[in-house]
Figure 1 (tube, one colour):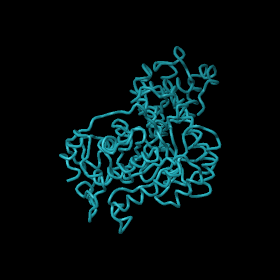
Figure 2 (tube, one colour; figure 1 turned 90 degrees about the vertical axis):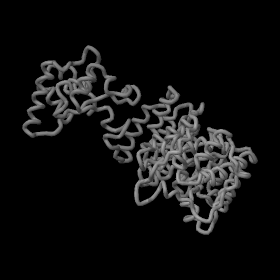
Figure 3 (spheres, one colour; figure 1 turned 180 degrees about the horizontal axis):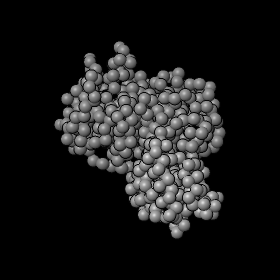
Figure 4 (tube, helix red, strand yellow; figure 1 turned 135 degrees about the vertical axis):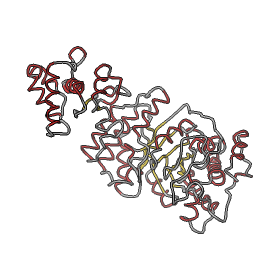
Length: 470
């Protein structure tokens, strides 16, 4: 069996694959991995016990598909919104271009004008790339746009080959892809093959032979041919012990060491159908891919893509540095989505959700009063421009009231009130009374300000000009 553990052990030990000339293995019937994807029950994970070694590349980058995959799940962005978001991507990525590339559709006049206007800004990063189907007509659009790099849809699983391209064999479909990619290389365009539905594909029988041929074309024309690994249905898993085709570490390792793709040309594109997008993207970096494809706030088809802002923080975790990425711009672009685009970001959403650094529990507020690091993973005010806060509920306690006052009046160090302050205790008793009488389930910030004015009038008059905007 092509994907058997015994075969993989031989591959790992020898760093070579014993298929003559790495030709695509044509089969009369599709290989659908029904033992893993039975369809009438949830997908299954199998373990082969073969562990590939971890190897984090020296260089890691984030790439973006906000204007391509990100527009396949919502109303298209306006031209002005695309330009504004492109500027935000430039700011987040910083001067070192850690947001290396963004890809765009080329089909409509608006798409092409957006590309033209974004390029006219003269920003070095992110590099603007196109996205095309595997046709020379689509490639012509990329040539006319004078793009340096183009990604091409190259559906690779038998689900696609046998049912999308009816009547064509595996090798015939691969030949079709290679023809368009070679045409792009002849025009001096860096081509990127998106091997769609990779996590349901025959890795050793189709993917490796195809990618080996891509590397030969790269050698022939002296240009990179990049490979994107789309986990199209979010079926990938981040564990090296899992079997193919679901193990992201194994896929990345095999494309690096067997197909010969340099880390800098290898990109992961994850979907979040099973909440595994970030874990899989992290695994791709850990096992040899330099590039991770994302969208702002994970907005994308079905359950969404890997969130760009999450990978900024994963990057810092792996590398020990943000490399001059601007995390404050993440908060600003979130505000832009809310106020200009009208997009609702759930309050519980990580990093930019309204409640990300807000506590409702009194015991948490008490801990935060004693040491702000107790219930925060990092300094949210420094990195995101958002100070920690507290929402007043029946469970906030007088510690929550004190924390709220310190936050909303911007009190620092010795200026802060503690939970035993007489005014704080009076406010808390008033709050409790409202809850007990059933007047409210939560106390709004505006109501809290009125309570401070009522029970701490001298404090309010002295500090009213320091109030955070509500």
